Image (tube, rainbow, N blue to C red):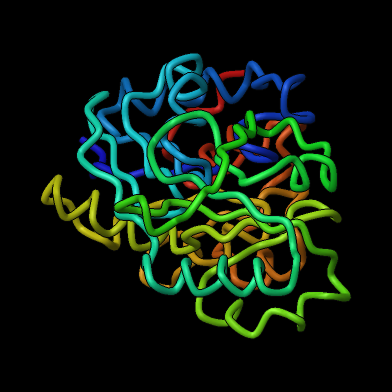
Amino acid sequence: MMKRKYFFFDIDGTLAVGQPGRQYIPESTKYTLEKLKEAGHFVAIATGRSYAMAKEMMENMHFHNMVSDGGNGITIEDQLIGIEPLNFEDCVALIEECQEKNIPWAFSPDNKVRRLAPDDRFYEATHDFYMKTKRVEHLNPRDYDQIYKVYIAIEKEDENKLKTLNLVPWVRFHKEYIFVEPSDKAKGIRKMVEHLHGNIEDVVVFGDEKNDLSMFKKEWTSIAMGNAIDELKERASYVTTSCDHDGIYNACVHFGWIKDEL
């Protein structure tokens, strides 16, 4: 019997093809996932999205395991084990600096599909539909116990105006604003494999974007999609074809984890 592997897949551009809201999973990918499960391998999603934002997609894609929240959330067999929040004081310092400099902001204090903002300026600056933005009069982050994400409406050329930005992990997906969010998927992967009493060297990760760099480690197998950024390909153990050209299937056939039957 083949040694059990622990597979972790990014969503956008890896498992799913197309823009959010109009995505689909290639049939070859669906086939591959089922064959990996049948062979006794462990399969999971590894995403920067919050658990609340990723749960429906996890269910729709027939996954039962997930590293969410950029490595800070763990779900095993459909049970949320826990989500570690961001450093509270660092986030508050950043928000307070945004207030002082009149920069629109919002944040997520809990595991829900919405963020809170003190006024309408964040939405007016971004017109973002990633999640609902709820206006809360006199919003004060210190009235909450935890912070999971912060959203700041600031363009790239103005990033250096925020001195406290270097205290927190952040990423830019959009021209109009940045996400302050956990960015160490490898931490969640290690935690999950340890929980399952597996071996780290049996981990296999698939990714394509900048937020996947953290999980491309030398101690396990890292596979970059053909559509991945160059920096990720340089770190990869193997570069497969793009997600819409049977990339996951081709990689798994290459390594002998499934048979070439399509």
